[in-house]
Amino acid sequence: MHKAKPFPAPMLTVTVPEALRATGIGRTTLYKLIRSGQLHRVKVGKRALIRFDDLQKLVATGREGDAA
Image 1: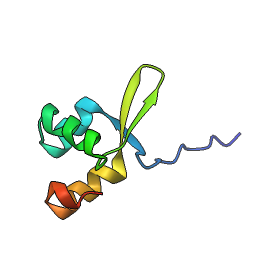
Image 2 (image 1 turned 135 degrees about the horizontal axis):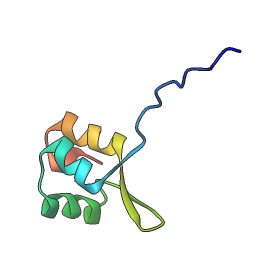
Image 3 (image 1 turned 120 degrees about the horizontal axis):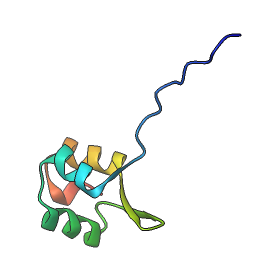
């Protein structure tokens, strides 16, 4: 019988510690960006997750004010 190989799915969200490591920004700055609406936090149960596409936009612009 043929075993299906799992395909790699793109990351939709990351945890707060993963977002901090991936971007190099500090926790205070991350939460400031969430409060301003430039990053979106998704709560799943007790976990706080950050949308990966928001992080990509933030890094691509290189400026906090253009992330939204």
